[in-house]
Length: 184
Image (cartoon, rainbow, N blue to C red; front, side, top):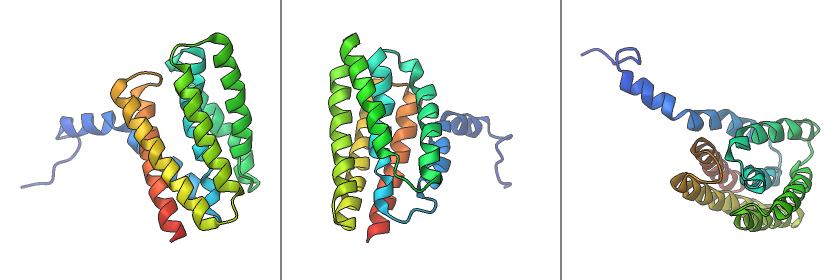
């Protein structure tokens, strides 16, 4: 019996193509963990992940999710390069979209805004707290909680495209577990 290749098994190729968000999350995980000196440096993900839901919810347009995530990822790069935590810059962006969503009265926006605020508060407590271990645990638990949020939205297929919810869930789970491993 010979090993099956992708060319010989089109269903395997379809499966790989269908799971592209999972595979796309892996380099982002690597970039998030690369050169990490303090687990609290991952707190920005507690703001960025909910922002991926807040932006499309504030304007009631799920189609802008991926462009918004790309713009957000590029915008945080200078902070990461300079060794700064981009969480506070992302908090400003979140505040802007809370105002936009409030003014537009977008349907379903309120739940996204509340979630974004709660995850942002968790990020701030994790960053500003004196304990590296407690901060890391809060970040880990926050990311795992956000992964559950992603799975819920993936099942509903609302607010964001399913591809984003899958991508974000994979990112949140892997980085959330990695945060726990790094602090213990």
